[in-house]
Image (cartoon, one colour):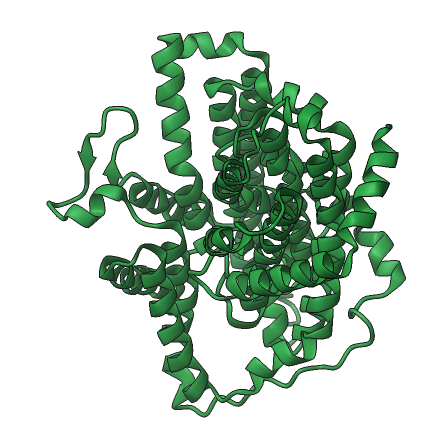
Length: 518
């Protein structure tokens, strides 16, 4: 039976009433977990695992896929409305989504995010269905030096994010690297910057850091102006999803680029959706003809990050299904689901349990459509959050942040961490330091160090890395990005200096001696 006929038969099984109802419930629960900071998609999948015990293997895995898709997409809701990334994948969505909400364009921002979440998911699922084995072979060619090259390239994006004020951007990024180094060092387990506190040996949790640097910091900034009488934000009504067909075609090239980045990053185990979203956002900003609008409420920023982080889902499923290697935390939970149902993820899965594999492919497509319908139906309900007065909303958000932080690892240290990072985010705001380089370096710093040390452990010298073509490509691009950014900064500095000299130069006054009145 051919791939298309197997996919068609699987789609008929997936569309049975019981299966559809369970997948709708899974998507809805995933969206709820994804939209609440601290309650991640991996947590939702972990909680749903016991519920699949009594189901057939195919139905059980389809329900877990539904929760996964809903959880990743749900993060955009709180990211746009409250400046709180519900999941690590939605970090970059806050950069333009929240400013749009503050301008009264919350419904438009949600519409853009929902549609391009769906399109990014569908793109990666098509790749997953027809090219999974070939892409898995490509992923196997990546070694530790190659992954280090990708992470190093991602770190150089700080230079682009800091354009206009390189010193402040690099300072913000270096502080992010410092916090990333806290805890036990990879490989040798040496304690660093723990100050004798046992909880710090594991480092700072990603979600608690993001909750603090975005949500708590924003609460502190907003609290300053509540006494001045902040009014609720009026929400502009939109037709459909809030954008035209012309805008859809205009944003399509950027969406395809972001979906390719998301799928590619998802295939590589251990890097994750947060990295793909940030990379897609920075790439879109760098290639835009109007980069100055990014961070001010540009819908193209939402297009890039939502396409990328949802495309990571299909990419992460490729190594799981083909090689039995989980691509991120959620697929690690799904690997447990395979074991529970007596399935062995890997090459033999396509031979022994082809019905399950193609059932997952069909479920991915249908769950993406369910996600689109559920979120679009609830847009008007989501934006009601903005109508709650700030003096009521902010304390509720703070409580929600504390509960979400505690639920991450069930320890009070994480609640204390969001306060610390909230103060750091508040100081960043006061000193006009960008938070984006901090977040990027914090997310990627630890991975960069681990891949470097593991590569050195295997290849003995750093020079041996240059024998790897993949590493050379990414390292070369990274160096080119650094040189180009320095050149642009130097050119802008000279232009500003020349302009300043022109302004400061006194205008000569010509006096006619014979006619002084002239």
